[in-house]
Image (cartoon, rainbow, N blue to C red):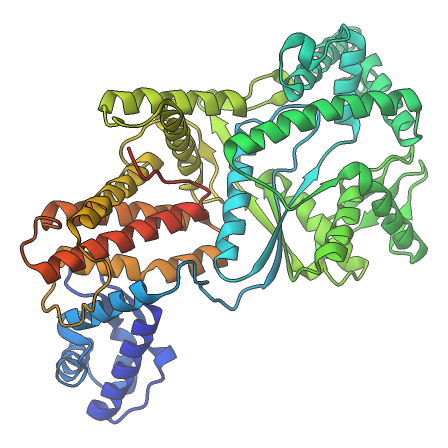
Length: 597
């Protein structure tokens, strides 16, 4: 499609030279897709040519349209609407476009000028709680962006930085010490991440009670939060951990082990994976080395209380703490170390961090600090900042236990898919295992599509009822369309209809056929734009447009019932190519499509 656009631009440039004796470079020509209410594929904006050509916009459009329909075989018709020249592409050109699509190797990369060695960091869970709805958006975004970039031919490494140390981890550990009764995931028949998360919430509950009591006694709230006994104990535990205290480290390893098992089970259920895991416990010491380097070079400074800071006022970012007064590290410290480790491992030219927009300032500080240290990989950092997920009742809060649990949500959408599919009664012939797999594919498809169809930059409201709907602008609607095409292909094979043919001599196309080819030809541009903007939402919209266009095509023209053998073969091939495009698009979103339903 992009090449066709370039060819049309070249023809327009030649027409301008022939008619007006003027030279206009192709990059100066403004072409856009024709609006749906007008006939045509490409629209030239003629307003910008009036000064250089000395004619009115409509005169220019009329003259160019007449010349192209006479001299350019790829253009079959035109219409002029004020300052817009709408050009219709000839059926033979559409057939040639389709022939090229059919002959392309499967999974051929859509080459771009973008980065070629990319690291995508996503998920980044804490080991003090299970994954929740916000993590799901993060995981689905990271996985999908990685797949989209792979489709451009880039080498992509998916990594996960696990937040396995810090004050929040000590809170869950202390909660378990104080309020637990030697429970284990086995003794309570509970996933390890859920067990640990329970004690994080319990810690916060009792901590808030202590703060409230101190405030009631006349202590200022800020001081009460810092001096509450549980908080003092948690900070003492963090210091012991960094000092290598055997008892604290042993408990830390045990509880983290429970969480890893739980998180890995969730990752398997939602279909995301990673090429490498990093752990903050293994990066913070390297981060401390970078802080010392900054101090030695006079780039960082110490305050009277012994804490270490970086001054980024010239960068418009104020001062940022790097080490606390007790010598313990903060998030930024370990992020300095992780960035260096990732670069040593992958030598990336782009490092994408999939992190919510609440951390915009933090990511700016990280990049600015690395630039101050003159690290060669600082410029390669890109923050894929995405909007948080809200509930109808407001913002999710882990410490208050007001979150949508990822495991529970997946179970709910799979159950909803099961109920809806059984109501349709279209699963005859599937074994029990095949049905179970189908329900999982549909439920997870509904959830992933719901979260990915929204532009990443937008904050989104999660509506539980909408998320499990299987009709309309949903993942299952697209999945159903693929299953319909798969069934048609099986019937065509039984009838002996070939999907491979020479279609160039087919003749005139029906409107639905032309629209279907045009939609298929957009795939490469969609992938390029999604890769450029790191937006799976562009692919999600395209997959939906494909499914809608095909359903319209299927309703308007006969396929297997078409008496003309050549037309029947063409329509089967068109259906097959659409099925492949739907499957490829959904794969970029991490969504499977069923062959039978």
